Length: 134
Image 1 (cartoon, rainbow, N blue to C red):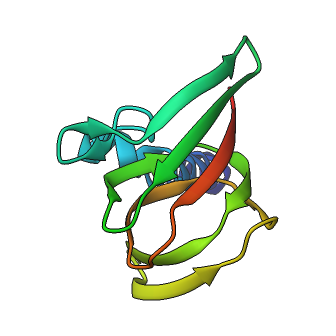
Image 2: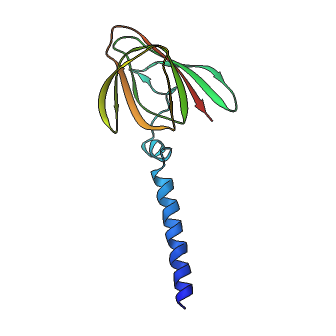
Image 3: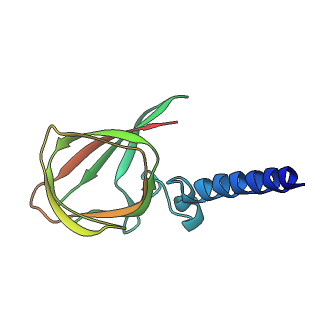
């Protein structure tokens, strides 16, 4: 009798853990908020990103932010990136708002971003390549 209750409890605990892990995964939050991806998101109705290449494995975007232009709230899937031209960027996400002097020639990677928004506060145009995994 004890073994049967123990097995039921173990099974229930495992199912709860799996459901919690799915609900807390980075990919789950953007879908729940119905946010656009970086290509769909723009700035005041205008696109800031364009597709340079897309195939079954990746999508490569070029995103350009002149002074005073940003990227409205959006999410990112797993990706890597390269800064073609740096700029002074304000980034707002779940951690708060911060200003970064992004340098040209830098690279970055992420397992995904639930949401963020950016704004170019500088006097130079920022340009980035973003390569998303499918």
